[in-house]
Image: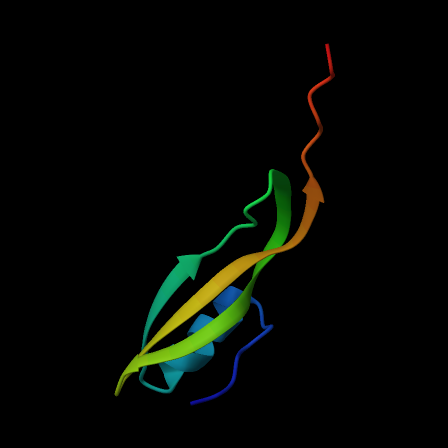
Length: 71
């Protein structure tokens, strides 16, 4: 199986599907309040069966969400 860690999600999916894998995608987010942007990137790749793989992906850029003004 090709290592697609760090690759664009759609590219990674095409590569693995061409190799005969069934691809499951899980989107992950920061536990903090942030604004996500940019393309999804693969941050984890795990083979879950002989011909199945799970990819975890997140947006490549984020900025902290604006704080609420203090009273």
